Amino acid sequence: METEKQKAKAGKLYDANYDTELVAERNHCKEVCYDYNRLRPSQKAEREQIIRQLFGSTGKDFCVEQPFYCDYGYNIHIGENFYSNVNCVMLDGASITFGDNVFVAPNCGFYTAGHPFDVKQRNAGLEYAYPIKIGNNVWIGAGVSVLPGVTIGDNSVIAAGSVVTKDIPAGVLAAGCPCHVIRDISDNDR
Image (cartoon, rainbow, N blue to C red; front, side, top):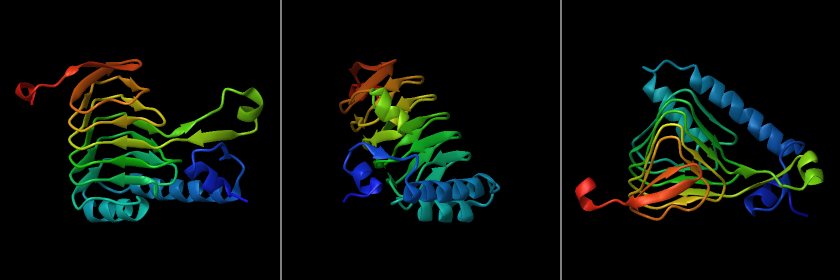
């Protein structure tokens, strides 16, 4: 029989609210985030060490500004030269993967979790988690929300305040709620 954690990894409905393993892992992660968010900005080595232990994988050079929040941590993978500004939230019931040279502005959220439309399933505490993938050389403006299952292609820009509900192809400027491709980004714009 599949565990709730295995169901989540497979993109199936799973019990995130009452499964003791997942609740314990989230509580542990909350404790780690609490400690991380209370470090002084000058404690760069300690901050880096915590993120390396918390995340599934990291590049050599990265910066995750405080405060930062996530559910599990081990489902987050960041590439080289990753930067996220203050108030970043990553609900990582499924994997959240960032390529190299990704810059995330303040107040952004990456949400792999979703809830069924069926009232009985939702009231029973069931949810699903779909992976999020962000390519290389992506800039994400302030206040962006990226929803479950989204892929953002290389060399793209997501404008401030966007809600990304669908995949964004490589090399485009996208904006809006929900997010729409505005135009291709020409080499002259870079």
